[in-house]
Image 1 (tube, rainbow, N blue to C red):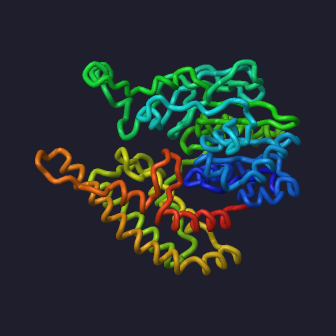
Image 2 (spheres, rainbow, N blue to C red):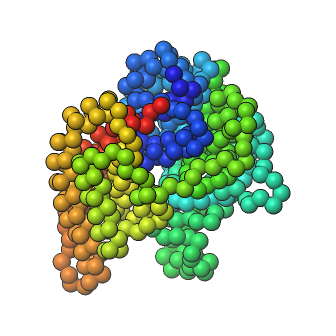
Image 3 (tube, helix red, strand yellow):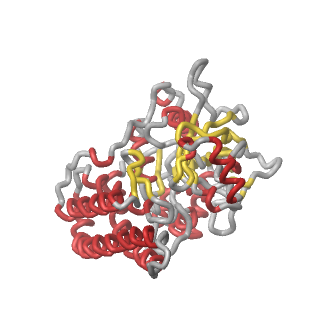
Length: 424
């Protein structure tokens, strides 16, 4: 059994991002399902650490079920380590029956939905001195920055045994609220918008708030991070991740302590194609055509080589998940189990893919038409957009929602195929 297990339910692109980081650190990992955990996997073949990547905390709780949630609690109390990012951090909080209740803190609700849509880099302030916090990088080193991707919030309590390892500072080198890049705006714009519209765009709720915490449960430890330390191209965050993993794994060797340890850049389109499957090749062409269409009509834009940006309200996160999953499975040589799984699913997937390509094309063009007509006095309204989006991607339930509708019929098989291909 590998020293690390990764809960693979509801992983989107965040599971792939985590898997790349572990691979960069030369740490084998077994990708497991909530059903496997519920059946006793953590008891019968215990790893040292369970990592839960980003995604929707409630969807992960549903995948585990009450039995699986209990198995994880017992695993940590018995001496195991738990590391949760974003949705995985939310799962570790105390939030009724749909949480692990490892940390006594709850998730704090948002007072401004717009300010919740923050992503990019935040400067971080050191928390309490602790063995899980690495030593500072040294004099002259750049101020640490952690990537955040639409994070939740902790609701701290006093005298609860929770150690704050890091807090949010000010904005970092790149920070967005929805589709507006804040660090590209003149400072006067914030004052003008506040005076004219009563709008406070800067997510001030983050200033000084905990972003990375840890604590003990019985003989085990948990670390919860709303910052995505596994993000490629974030060397200081990656250094923190390597150090935290070394503590959770009980390893003091130099392989996880190197100051140069970092997750390499991720260019999704440049990944090699090692599995020349015609259905997967068709899926890549369909998704790339949808991205091209969205970019041509000012709905989507390239933010990084691994993340397509999107105009507020569009299902950009779902398109990103599909894009990265398709290329991830194309970039692996399939074994017998993966081939057998795909042989049973490929025909249905291909039919859904053709329908998806046509339907999402029509939806994106309708959004483009609405963008123009909404600023044209006397023009007819484009109706039914929310219903079309719900049919394709499921009802809106927050930025980390995997998506439902037709999209889920594509993403689900791809996530399972990726699990079979990428597990150690």
